[in-house]
Image (cartoon, rainbow, N blue to C red; front, side, top):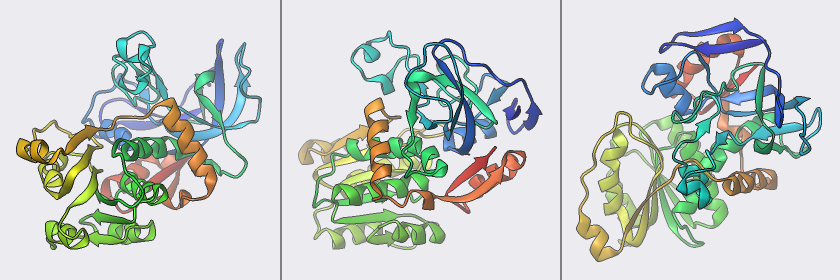
Amino acid sequence: MRAAVLSPAKDLRIVDIEKPRPRLGEILIEVKVSTICPTDLRKYLGHTRIISPLILGHEFSGVVAELGERVENVELQDRVTVFPVYPCGKCRYCKKEQYNLCNKPSGIGGLIELGEKINGSFAEYIVVRAENVFKLPESLSFEEGALIEPLAAALRGVLQSNVKPGDISLVMGAGPMGLLQVMLLKVVGATKVIVSEPLPHRRNWAKEFGADVVVDPYTEDLKEVVESETEGYGVDEVLISTGGSVEADLVPQALELTSKSGTVVVFAGTWPSKLAEINPNLIHYGERRIVGSFLYTIEDFQRALKLATSGKLKLSRIITHRYTLEKIKEAFEVVISKKGLKVAILP
């Protein structure tokens, strides 16, 4: 089979390798659509380690091509998507069913660096554990099926914000994850969603996906806009949905923009790691909260699948570019340039 194999940073090659075979409790999936995640990008650029050589990719959908022994939850030719995290099942967090916080999880395609190496979905076929496979309803396309994983991550961030109907929310960053959160906040019942985003084409996309107010933080005073839109109280929740070192600079600003009893969600990681300076008085006197959001649980994944099926989200619109496996390097360059949103690989 053909696969995109990464060795050192940017050494990404299309090679012919032996098609994997499913063992006991495993399933072979013919990959139909696989989208590029910022986690894939960090590994491609060499910002985070990989156990090389590695096939990246963990946001995908496909068709069941072969069943290992004792697999009963799917049948041949079923259309499926996959929960790409393998918790260790033994640590304190797994015993508390906080599987997204597992001490030593493994992730398909290098999603998580702590556990064993598991090749990913930038290939024609992939083998996965049967219990991680979910059938796709007929109403969902393969592209929408590939987006269940990022939707689950975005959903966890929204759930961590404790958003309620009638709230006014702020999303910092209108990349794919921020735009998914804009849609989710509106579905949950936020009456107004403000988006801060420096790139004009992404501000336009934010409007398309339901943002009520968009702000260029480089040319406009975000604090003035928030005060005007909230009668001076501040927003009920802020989701910091942009990564990189800039995120650390946004945490103190987000606290200042949040109302009393409001919540700041730190949704992404900083690369490289960077400290944030915050005023603890804002937390103490205003009972503001800062919470993290990492990965998702099985329940989050199932909720995301149900939401995708509801028709309330413009999910497929998130994919703006499509490439064959042979042109995967071009696909990564589009992600780096931020010219699009989600970029799909079609093996």
